[in-house]
Length: 533
Ligand code: PEP
Ligand code: MG
Image (cartoon, rainbow, N blue to C red):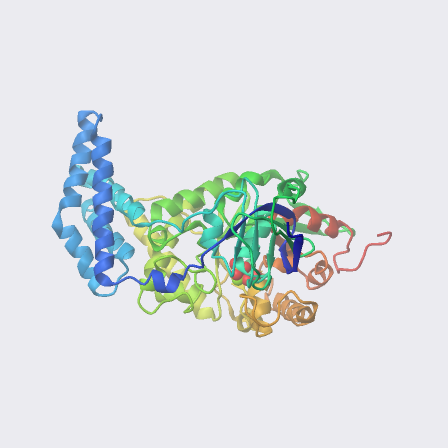
């Protein structure tokens, strides 16, 4: 039997995992999901058929009153004028999901403004079928891999990570990848051991492999299963719980620091003790949607945001609008004209396709009633972008007002993750608050890339420039709340400089709460080490 074979890679998420190799096929999202118009129409027809089938199934065994409603819904779905209206929107370049939503929203508005009460009552039935068809349009996610195995591939898409059940353990080994990429970030927040830059090596499906996310080493067993299993979940899980200090931590000289958590997948809240944190400092909403159909689904988004706000109680929850693009592609996105996974990202994409922003804004406005919501805008470069998004919120608020739907206007702030914005922070008068996103800020500052090419942004060499920009930016914030939610906030080594720069609000991955909290109590507010430490 061949002896163990060791490969030195780069650590991206700590912990040790052992399991069988799962050699994954690389998916080419851009090529495979570029849909031809006819195909897209077929996908709508198929989704309508699915919805009809579901309704027919529901109708069996329903009482006569329910059957009347269901029959009406089936009748509407059979009505060719709805499909035709959707198709003509698609012919002008609208994405299939948004064409469907916009067509149905038109009918819903017509019904809602009817003089007759009976007609107005029908609006909710149409809303129901709108969402049912949207659900069917979502499409099938990439095939999952066996629970407990170690995913080995050149790279991994965030949606694949999120669709997998990690409860049985497992790990990730990427030939390329980056420690600051979004999958690495997700792996750290879920405590999944991961290494990147492992270079291509030969491995066989099913053979045992050990991933050491602490040392960055992987060990492959050539023949039989002789690597002892290590339960990687246990060591880090305890890090998620904190003393019930409400998220307030005092520095050694008595200055109050607020600690928040970053949430990627909304299910992560289940493992965080709400009493021990100041709230959510960053919810990456793009990870809660798996396809354009999800992005078009106001009700689905509303339910997700409301759940997080209810979990937080009175504590603030900062939900960032979709930061789609770059290494965060969205299935079905590239059939939107002028957009691709390598095209515009963050707020530029949202403003280029306001139909995405409007739906998200409505879901956010409605959920704001359930707690203390702050909305954060991603990848902002110019003040006009914040002003335009604020206008979208105002317009959607008036629309909800007209329809009598409860909502609350949240505060609207921005990520500071583009160097041009950090340098001009005093000109962003329309932003209510700022949060430094050091992952992208570092990348754009040192001409690197989050896919692992170029310099690694967490290298010590990059740090002084990023810290100087942060320090200057924090001064330009002119009294508005300013925090940090990039990975630098989770690094105790950066803490002295971040405190010295005047930052008092830190949002970190749940698994890093304890480490950051202990580091804060040993420092003075100016970043110097406390006497006796
Ligand atoms: C960042 O860029 O630092 C950030 C928090 O945003 P994301 O990592 O999601 O790009
Ligand atoms: Mg970012």
